[in-house]
Length: 166
Image 1: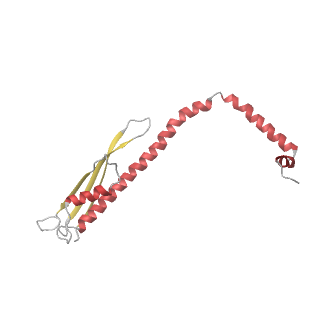
Image 2: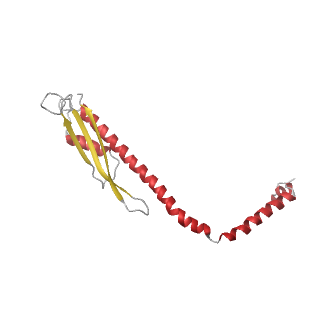
Image 3: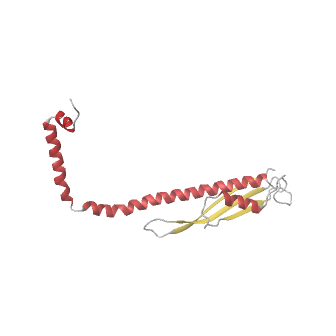
């Protein structure tokens, strides 16, 4: 006994083959009655679908940018709280700003605004000493690029503060 392509069709009863053939003929007869309605439905639904898909990807990009800004501020404020002017390795505002800028995953065309400030919580007249507060803030403008819609811009900002411990 050999396995030929015809041996599989011989094992099926003829009534099953007839019903499959009848079903296929019925499907082929129903297809011409649509008269291009699928094309019209696609033309209506596709722009809406694309706007939703690209909108979700832009929302994910914006959330990534916000989380990145929050991380960079937290990292820089922790660095500033440990490296005060009274520590063994004091820092400068430029070093903290450079730390924030290097921690951001943004395009080189975007220039973030980084501000570092120290608020006095102790009775000592100086700033940037143990017990004071180090604050770091970052802000930049982001642009949404959605199909079929006008581009709009908005600002992403994050702020963090820590008490200087060293």
